[in-house]
Length: 166
Ligand code: GUN
Image (cartoon, rainbow, N blue to C red; front, side, top):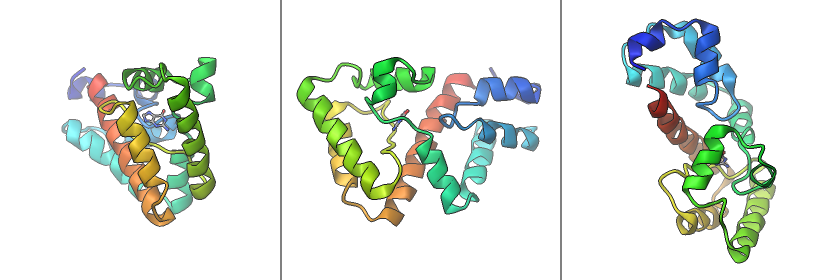
C-alpha cells in the first residue's frame, strides 16, 4: 500500500495492519496513528522511533521483553506471531541441529539472566552461525549498552516489517 492509503486508514485498520511492526506492542501503532498524515515511509518510521526513544528505560526494556526467545518455546509450540515465525524460519532457526539448539538455549538463558530481557536481533538478514556468534558476543556487554543494542535491533526489525506493508 502507498503512503496515501496508509493515511486513509481508520485507527482500527491501522492497528490491525501495523500492530505488530514492533513485536506484540500494538500500542506503538495506536499511538503513532495520531501523527497522520505521514508524508512518507520515512516519516512514519520516524514517528515510531520518536515514540520508542522517549520511553523511560522500563518501557524500552518492556518492548524487549515482548519478544519471544529465538528458537524458544513459542517456536516449538507454534505460538509465535506470524512475523516472528517467518523471520526465524528465514534464518533457519526452525531447523537447528541438536548441538546448535542446545547452545542457543543455553546462551539465551545466560543472556536473560544477565540482562533481564531476551536477546533480540534482526534475524532476517542473518544465518544460524552469525546469530549464535552475536549472542555469545553480546552476552559480554554492559547492561546499559545492551538495552541500547536491543532497541537498535527492534528498529531494524520494525523497518523490514514496515517495508512488507508499505
Ligand atoms: N528478531 C526478529 N524477530 C525476533 C523475535 O521474535 N524474537 C527475538 N528475540 N528476536 C527477533
